[in-house]
Image (cartoon, rainbow, N blue to C red; front, side, top):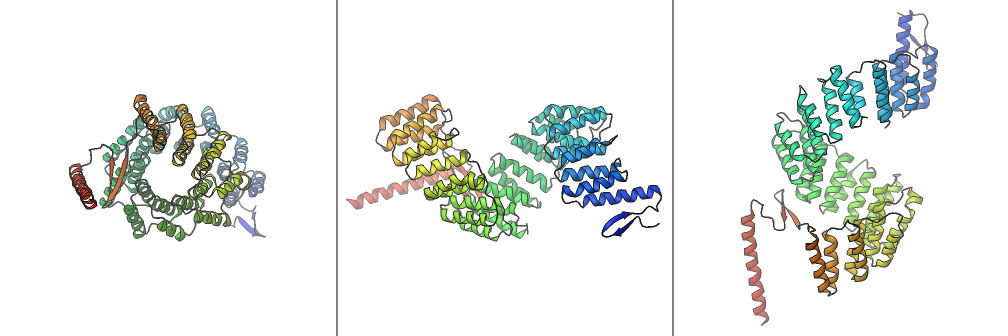
Length: 542
């Protein structure tokens, strides 16, 4: 057979010495290849014109690729214009168009097109159902679920998984569990989806119960459960599960490592965090930005800023998140000038600061008492970086003014803000009033906090301490009495220590620790030693 395409001047030219069917197939193959090579939407219209001129405008294979590539290149309107001119679109073209609309955040249009498909008696398949389910609200999800059952797709694995995700997203866990229970193949993949549904809704005990029932667990299943525990603030359980995962010889990926590092960060478990870092290197897990940023965050929050700097320096391809994490860590450790230096390096390298960057930078200025630089950064946010100040940025300025003792100026700043202050901002100013002994302004700020209904026991305790530090014991006692009368629960004090890579948490008045008897015995021994030391000092002073 004679070749269907000859190259002339680098452009494909169709030969006309083939039989019609072979020529049509040859053109179809060429058009699909040309479309797949498009890098931007400007390249598409000329190819589209050739498609129309050669009567391939109704060729489902070519049109499918045309719709797909237009959607991929962020031109879903162009894709829809192509779709509209197809006489009788089949389910594959509907799927491509619905998928394009959903990917472009036009969920309502995607659902509407699915309904038109049903109205036009085009039988849906698994792919179009899974695509449209990503766009559905709860009522639409129930509607599609009805179609699934009616059309006999209830046993489809992909549809079942997507239905579970959809119900889980809206907190309809009983519906998600019903779908899971009705699946013929309830393996670790299906269980992982259901575990995520439970975790997303805060039902961590149900997630753990299901996890325990899974006979064969892969890395993704283990990681999903650890991640669920971390997101629900069950850090100790997350670390225990990670140890169990290792004992089961299940391989760890970068997502597992990041989840465990998040737990270490929250608990301040530096030694365990170091071990995870070493484990990542031994397992040859790539130091991606994802892992690197988690390591910087862990070391910063656990107190080893020098190790955080080494990780940051060793990262080849830093991104905005990397700089944000490093600047935040430096601010946390009071290395304000170093944070400013990294910010300048970030800007010089062409990265555009975002809201998080500027919060971190303002925090650095606040911790270092750099008032002039902080005000300069705040005033240039919108003008230079195009970032509109949010409540967090205003809060940083209030904190900065409070730290340097300019309390009245901080209060005036709050009064003139275009947005209402939150309890965190007012709490920061109240704390500054205590530090600088400004009773009058402290009373005013405390009253505003109490009236806002966002106050907690900390507000009353701070106000009580302000009175006590100024010798106003009567007022201090009255404030503490009002806590008891109003029924506000004071959050118990909590501390954690790391011993042999195990995190031990202690609450005030808590007697649940398994080693409580040995701990209290040791405390009594220390108390006796301290009393003896006091007696000896007294005797020596006589």
